[in-house]
Length: 212
Image 1 (spheres, helix red, strand yellow):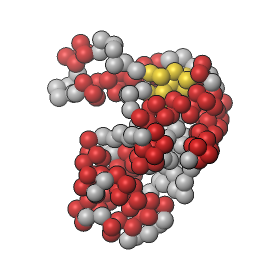
Image 2 (image 1 turned 90 degrees about the vertical axis):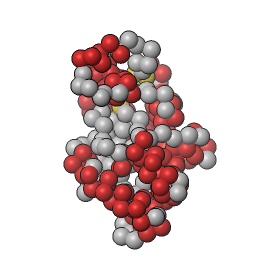
Image 3 (image 1 turned 180 degrees about the vertical axis):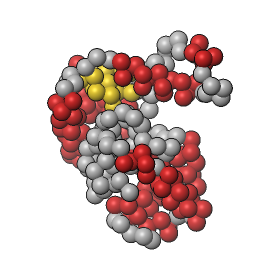
Image 4 (image 1 turned 30 degrees about the vertical axis):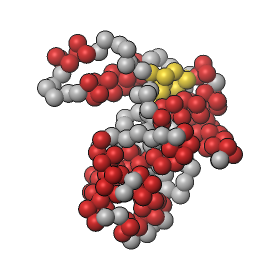
């Protein structure tokens, strides 16, 4: 496991280093929502680039709630903090913004984040859990994992269906869960067509060959 973790960290670091060079950026601004993914991505990036080359953007203690009255009704505190982190990272001079979401969330969530670097974008949620003991996702994806019988079952079916290119790969899931997976995957197609930088760790990677 330690060797595999090291290899993944090396790949993430190498891709991030090249992305910085390509964009003329000096450091990575990692959106930090306190998730296991944020901690893992920060660890990989800092090990490869150095602590000074990684800024963890967190606004949990900032006074952003007063902005709620300026926004459309129904905007949650969680959404407000997400967007505040995104804005903060975007305004940092010389920074390359990065989002720590895992592959399960990126495939089945509401759409790819706008940040150009997705350091964990080719690691399924269950793989993240294996590396650091936990995983996170939106409420919709967590509910889908529950309906599938757990995140391990969901990711196993996704790997067979997408990475293995097996049309019957989702058949191991309950029928309703399988249909939800197909629907959510189709709904994210437009977002996947916009380029992102994702370290290629598996057979089919967002931004590289998962564009359908």
